[in-house]
Length: 121
Image (cartoon, rainbow, N blue to C red; front, side, top):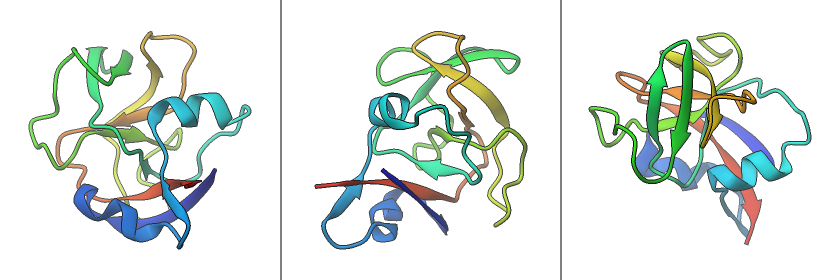
């Protein structure tokens, strides 16, 4: 898995991955991150919804609440916002399918650009 920094829209996220790669799923980020903390905001290949509150949140691939803009779902975010390229995450430090542990998901409303997490095909 490689984090490809950028300022792509969600529909254009795959353009950031090199030939022979695809955008990773949220579950792949969780399984493969190996304790790494993201340095940039990254799209996954999932339309992630949120549950909880901005201070105790988690993302899901089904259920939960969809972000108001379908082209701005939750994504992987660094611990502070904006990232070095100016990508913004309004929610930070969310878990995956449960509040803890923090799996660095966030984003949502008004957060229209990010890089992409890329995995081999």
